[in-house]
Image 1 (cartoon, one colour):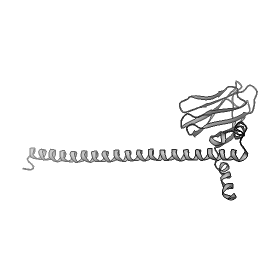
Image 2 (tube, rainbow, N blue to C red; image 1 turned 120 degrees about the vertical axis):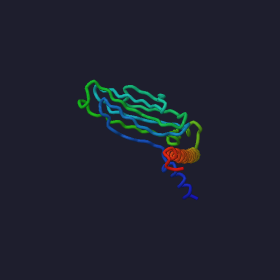
Image 3 (cartoon, rainbow, N blue to C red; image 1 turned 90 degrees about the vertical axis):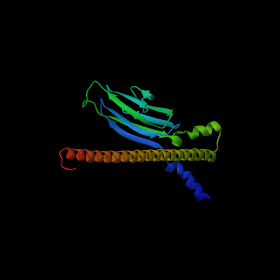
Image 4 (spheres, helix red, strand yellow; image 1 turned 90 degrees about the horizontal axis):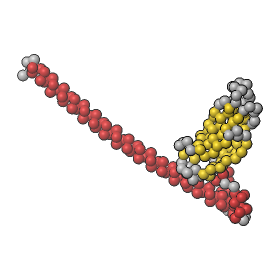
Length: 207
């Protein structure tokens, strides 16, 4: 009994939705990070940008429709959170601005940690509010994880059906185009035969 239960407890560790990255941002440049996230998913993040004199760094998070989900000017350190309204590609952009010019100011170090889905939820806070025991909290976590996995499989099945429909539609179009092309070739060949026959008759080369 203990071994399967321990394996279940390890699932949240093995299947994490965590995005963590560190990079250097040169002055007067813009770098963006993109990630696809499902619908109705909680996304949380924490960022820290090293400070440089006479340099201002802006952070902006948008979706594919350019809707702003989070924006911070002169960002140095902070947190953000939002819930996705649809399956989409989300973009987090860091833009450095300085009047000093490129090469005269050291690059800024940017640290970004993003979590979504089960990993974004604060289960300690949930346990305090609902007065849950540690085992109950872990069961809630496993329940949320199971729901997330089911939703992922449902989305994959939907995408598979869409791709199958697209392939079938493409194959049908190719078939109709091939039949049309064949009919055109047959028509052209028939027209050439009759034209050449009339031409040769006009030249009295054939009867």
